Length: 570
Image 1 (cartoon, helix red, strand yellow):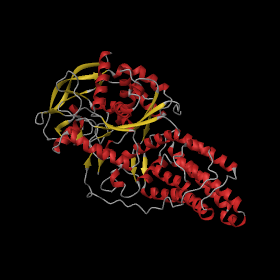
Image 2 (cartoon, rainbow, N blue to C red):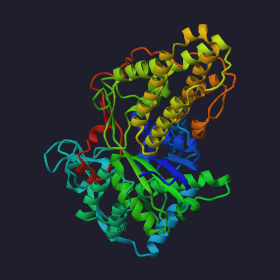
Image 3 (cartoon, rainbow, N blue to C red):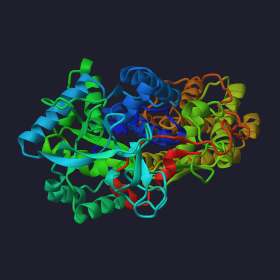
Image 4 (cartoon, rainbow, N blue to C red):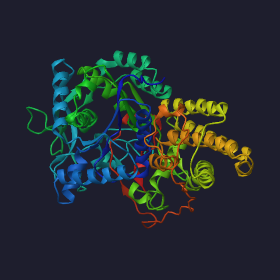
């Protein structure tokens, strides 16, 4: 189902953790979201794109300490790195913020207070793993030991990477602290819990009534709801980098409580100099809220998050668009095979705008994983984007410039233009439905139609026989090029700008699809894109070297069959 185009819209991407660089897998989501936002803006929609760095949690505090800097300095470094990468890949946020902000503290405390007042928060003692040497409670990813199910050694405290079963840190056999290597003890601690189970009926109704959700996502979440929902621990013991719970000495809000609230904080950051507030989006029903996320965090975004928002009296998401993971050449990203690349590294091999095209050409409204096949990338750029689209632009513009000094007249074939306009609306509907692969295929079809029209009308012959009639044919071709510039703009904005410059027009929007360019002087014709060479990725680390990215994954995600080893870079 399409979104309500009459409402103002807030769109978000999941918050990247401020503990490492953006890689080309992350870029799938940011490019996907940015394409959708650019499409909405092109269609005249009042839309805001908000994001932020996810900056709290034990890994931030520990890694900052290892580097001899403060957590604030650590996250500040990664914020700059992340923002640079988004800019390089033309991901255009209206607000890119941080969860370590006064706005996020305000909304986190407000939501916690409202949930407390309504009786959705309670305290109870739980047994946790504690390292006496480090003098700290250990999060799941900072405890290792032997899997209690299969006996695999060196497994984390939440899930076994060999047999994929989940467990508690206290279940591990011969556990040890992954920071110092010492065996931990068990220690009781009083914590805050959110009564997720009380929202079972509401969540079931919300999921069943929300027809915008992908069916496979709705079905998976409903399975979890029907299996029974456990209450959710929303606090952590210090030392911990995050927001201290009001009235507590050494208790902090769990990062997965305040992280999604970062969407609200980023909205507040956007609204600072606007005649509105974050509440216009989040505490009224006047806006559409759309989240783009990966399939590994659906438990948080489609159970915890909507329940927390509903319980606190906030607007719940209207849609959550879920995508799959990225593989490279059919396999998980690997340093040893030269296929794990940061966004900064990958732009050394190819123009980031071309990766936007490739991702769009492979993205559909499903959780299916996307494969970055480097040979296929080269083929699609050279055989589709260059040989089809760029070729049409250059042959039309250069021929018109050479033979008519760029002066066009009137369209001679309203039937062809009407057909192109109708097909262009098919592209519109594909973008609207998050079916970017279909949108690309339709754009290529229209471009092929333009090439065929040019070829069949043989203007190189007509210019010698009937210059006026031939100019009208070329004017028809120019208008096909104009539509292509509009349709490809959400995917390749700079490429589209180059075409606009040759058309001698500016800021084309979707309203211009039906508007003809006639009796107009074109700009200078230039080649907009050339073929690329084969991409050969250099190996940057010795065979077998490993690097870990610490991340938190909910135990129920394992039931999806998600390979948690995707976070292991060989």
